[in-house]
Image (cartoon, rainbow, N blue to C red; front, side, top):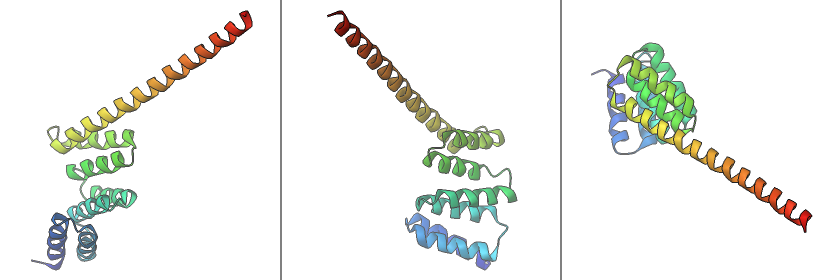
Length: 150
């Protein structure tokens, strides 16, 4: 086994143990030794997401996709990063790109469903505020009119 693979495996062990910083450090070392492996970038992106470093995670996922444009897991992780950043349009776009490659990918399908549910909640909030604002304005107008009539 070469050194890059060895560091990647150690990173995976740390990731499974929820030791995100140590996992990232191992993936850093693996990338130094093999800077052309999209899976290592994707793994480091997963650790970065756990560390709430979403922009850094997205950079690694873009790098992974440069090396392998058909790497569906990178699209699902990219969708997750955008979702956590509440950028639902880009999340949906990422999941859809993954589904174009593999229409049965569970992570992309589940992620897409989650985005759509969140968008629905956002629309419900907007509709509630709009309705509430309209009702308040009508109520104020009615009260003003009542006062004028008295």
